[in-house]
Image 1 (cartoon, rainbow, N blue to C red):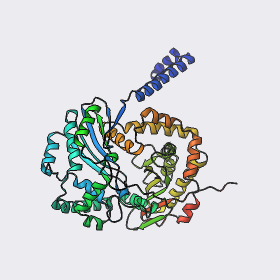
Image 2: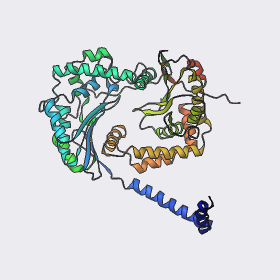
Image 3: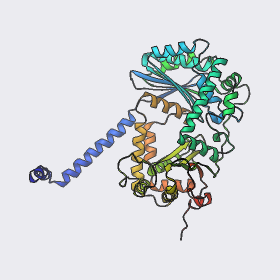
Image 4: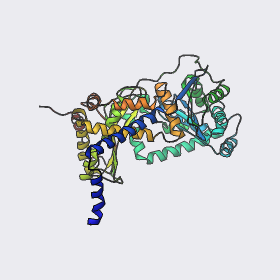
Length: 477
């Protein structure tokens, strides 16, 4: 054992000058900080060009051998009505079923022969079509994207076939309890407003949506000012702009009547419980109204969200986890998992917690959760905030690893902010958040507010709504 200790003693003797050690650590820290700041500043700039029809072209050229290009369209289920709810998602399915220039088989073969990946998704506020390909194939990818949103045939046979596909997809979603709970949460939090509807729409709408509904939706919403062509990777901006001008010149930029506007969505504190005692675990979400994308309170709420954190039984650590709620969950065996979330929309959002636990543990977990929320509103510490800021910065950078995540970031930010926020600016915004800012922001959004609650499963142990509401504040003496 003494032989093992001698090298350490020798090292301590060689570095007995403590001031040298301190200076060396500071020197290295300065280098690391400078390197981090330089890395943020040296990220390729996002260049933006607006075409004559109002369409925006935004790209970041990293010189990579691959690239991702896509169309981000400012429309989704929030722009639908009760009568056509689900049409945006239905339209996404129909986009790859053949155009006036290509049959479905021709389209699939062309994409496959390029070695590319073509995909699409629909959210409550955005519809996206994108392709990942080699840099030299960007021109083909852009032409295909323009073809599927401008020249889709919407054949009756394909429409009928996709009805069955979407109905099966709805059954799959119903088996994903997290998706079910969040749909219920939106329905109860934004009841009577467009955000309260599901993205897939009700079954009766899926069975009745017609070709005329699809064409009407495209004619109404697929306009130049509401579309962003985003590119990332080995993308030359001038070349991408020329491609956009050639392929989207026939895309309209004006409306016959008034342009459709997004309806304001009010938040309502309420609850919905779908009790099913045959299920082994309860799936519960609780939320207050959050901030919209462009609201300056969004950054402090993201920091607060990171302080609460997430945890799962499969994770390592446990009792020594930095999150107080995770420590309580491990010590008291309170839940199987929990996940704090901050969902943003144009003018509102949902800030809260989703957790899965056994029926007898619901009340105790809710007590710990709400106590932690109240602590954020009253006495959050500087150490917690600094740790959360570091985690948040790391996660933001890790999420931009690859051409597709960067392209998604460009497209989303262009629709949300009408620009892409540079990484160094975003980093400075996070750095500016202090414990006082987090406390004041949480006090405004959480303290003494009516929450929205959605629960599925054996949820008898969930406290009465009035009791949950009474725990959203602390009595002060």
